[in-house]
Image 1 (cartoon, rainbow, N blue to C red):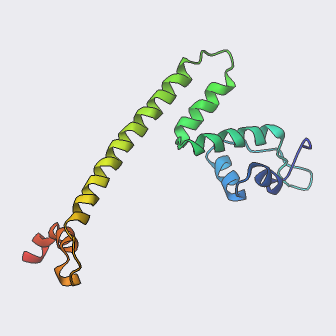
Image 2: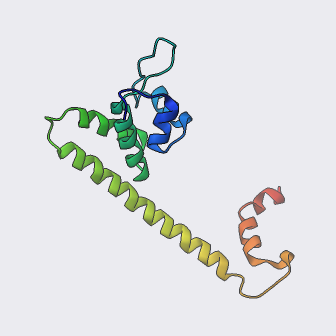
Image 3: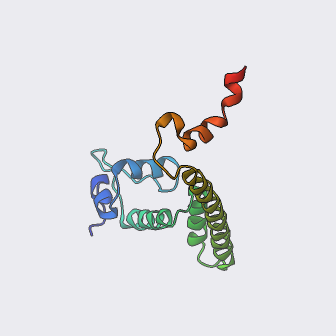
Length: 141
């Protein structure tokens, strides 16, 4: 890899869109690169490294605040890793809560689905009647 590259080359290297790179620059997660004499951004291998780090964290469904914290911690190589462990533990806890919420949502949908076991006309669809029941009080006014 050369010592500097244009945004298109960086996007290709990191397998992401140019707009994604610009967004990460805009929100301060990726430092703005120096410009060449002709005004083009000159990205460095360090930009590619941090972009790959961000993309890996995003693939783990980490939020931008979490990633920003990890980048800060990563840049302080003499800090203990307890902070990283704590952040990951909080992320795991959030995923566990999401799983519980998704399980509850699934159960609600299965209960709705089970209300209609035989083919009916739409006007007799128990699922649609149940869904519509939440707004029935509006019709009565």
